[in-house]
Length: 379
Image (cartoon, rainbow, N blue to C red; front, side, top):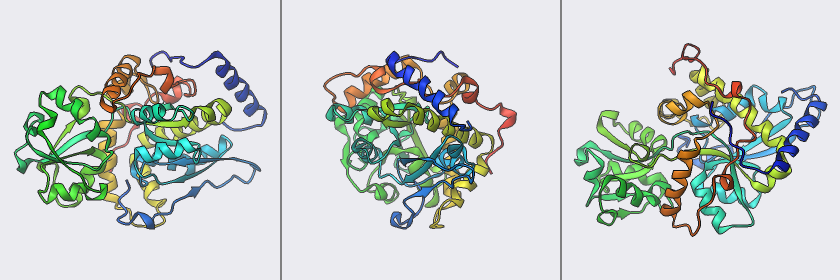
């Protein structure tokens, strides 16, 4: 595990230590595939242990519809990890990263799952409602350009002069000029078609566009469910083409973090207990997510594909194998901050400490990945 970076003031660390002592004195143990989003239950609550009279209510927003990628949260709820930390978790679906960040900024939620780069954009526009990342959940962003091989696009350079599609506000679309610069094509040579997020893959399948930008974890399950195979699809990850962005993180308002350091630390610790369980037995993790879907509309096979992609491309990377879960590499993050400033057209460059703190991460032992022999296959 790399040495932890201390970005916050010493006074906050004192608050953390004091709050931990207080917890100890209280005896605390340590897109979904639903076709109709309106049918999915919006909130789920942990069951309070009989011997625990009071739990602190904590509101969480997902990045989108509940998916297999949310397994760590669901497991930590089901197994009582949050309750052991004195927390009662409720969560609601999200509507995309920008919307999730905006609602977090209003104070409607205490924690949310979204990316640090859209957060930078939000912070510049909302200086009085700053948001920060307290742990990284996706070491590699699923930002990608996806095409069908029948389109004749076999490498990123082939995108020049093509028709591409994505919704307005799509993160990878906003960053496409940087991607184009990295692969050596003129971004203005591309013609863009805009559609609703739910129609993105349909436009590609119908040939209305030659390629789409988006998250591989969202687009690929939909394309496979429509009858395509991975042999029919080309995926060009931004991270393989000079834009090594981190994916989603656990976010919170800076003011909430300052006022509730004990809650922040407890939430992160319980979440990564669930994450470790997911890595050890991803099949059980997938089953837990499916069982939590009261609508019974989630497609297990599609969610399995999503989780397979995430485990291989997003959650477990060489950096995570070496350094453990939750943190980041300072040099890598500093570079991507500069790229995001250019991509989003920000007027100033935030420091790493403006957007991220590792002070609330659990111990190195709790963040070290299970050995390969302790990780069961996903079936």
